[in-house]
Length: 163
Length: 277
Image (cartoon, rainbow over all chains, first blue to last red):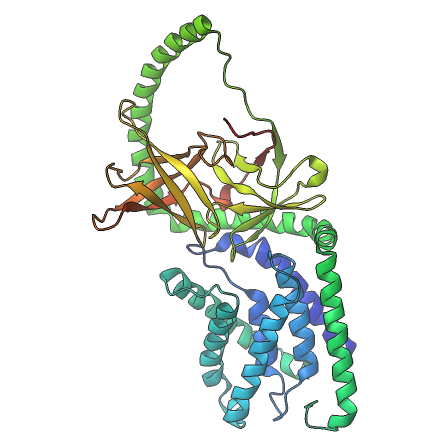
């Protein structure tokens, strides 16, 4: 039970350090990958995958941990990103309740637009949403890694682990 | 399990308690954020340094594959530029001799070098254009000190200082504006001043250049020290494409900043710069 919390805590911690040092040097025209957001979205997306319900415990824990490891490297107040991530999770929950289980049948079909929407929403909340080429590259760049994460998450059945 | 649907009455106190703990934790972290961030960076900096160095090596290695065609073209350009510079050196050597003679006559000392504190970059926040360096209050760093590299290329200024670490606001940050001078080959022409404004995503533009002056592609931009934060003569960038519109009061230009995060060997914080009167 506690193991999953430890695992996600260390994963977010590692990704925070990784994206503020290693991966930041692989920017494309300034566009970078937000690994913390990708992992958070995967947890939210797969949370309650085999049920209709939504596991708020793990989502809340992920939002707090992901928010902490984001804010510590940013020049923002602690808690800002957590609130934004919780807003994204709340909207996401409303959206999947409208889908009424269709997400479980065709997860990839819903994953693509929902990730892009969530990414746009997150950047809108962070006031980093711009309509230019760099932002388009950033969406594609993040999307590629999100897809990779999606298959890794599925391959290792991490969604069962996170429930 | 949906905590909002099952046994709402039993869950409500737990949820409220969770919210209270969350806000207390957030309040505590923000109250002691300087100390906390410094503590966190002390733990994470060895990992960040290792990953930063690994990233530098890997990105340089991979980058060379994608840039072979570009490198060949650049090599040709550099060869041409080298010859031009050799010619310029010869001319400057003559000027130097004349200058030295003049200085002796009017008893002016040579330019005082800055007092520098060396630092290593250990982290970057690409979203907001900040970098984290491993020098802080204990090393005599304070806010607004300029940060350069060994080639006197300007990176930015100290934005936030912690005990052992500092955050540097890059000149590409959206809040960054600095006065620059357009370096011209012709020394007789009047100086052209403008402002380099950060655009985010490690980019910036040249703005507020009077329409009366002509700026060209590849013109070099250096700091002018008019606003007093940066010493004059630090390298900022070069003009890529000018945008002159007679209907607007000033002309703009796209620029390429000289700082390159992938090639940071060592950074230096200028710790003794004072505003010239």
